[in-house]
Image (cartoon, rainbow, N blue to C red; front, top):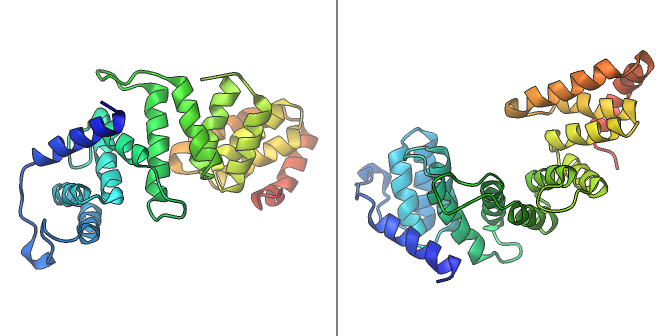
Length: 258
């Protein structure tokens, strides 16, 4: 049995076993509604904290072939949002999305690319207690697909980290810098910081420190701690002239020049 058929059957069994609940009659949405209406209902329900209603709506929309609802449902399993956290269930749904492929320019592209990256994350770390073990080569291949074909900044960043560490294949600092440079131009603060750290270690102290400092102004809360650690370590190693030059360069690198 192919992976695509397996995932389709697994998702079908899962959704058919789901408890049947009634939608709010005032919403005008029922299980017979169109997939996009169900998706919108699910999105609004999830946003307002009604996660059980969101799961129900996404399930019905997914049964009708709505890719965005499959993706949203997978995310809820990955996060344990409205359902018991189940990474393997999320993995199966992401796999179904990836196996379907996507038409160029399709509105489903964003879901497809996010599914590829989520699968890469699972292959990189494995899922304990499931058939999904660590497969760094597969993770690197999936990151490469999302990074090269679709220009997805998160995938470019993760691919670069694997290239720097020699995970899933040969170490290649030159290629890593290429992907970090592309990701930072796409607005990825983590890539900007890591790019700065790499060139700092190569001897471009002022410019590298400037990138790390600029990244602190752009970072998401989950990334700011490690970026600050990198920046502070580099700052302590730089001399006074390099620090002054770095401060002067920050506005320039914040514009993400070529």
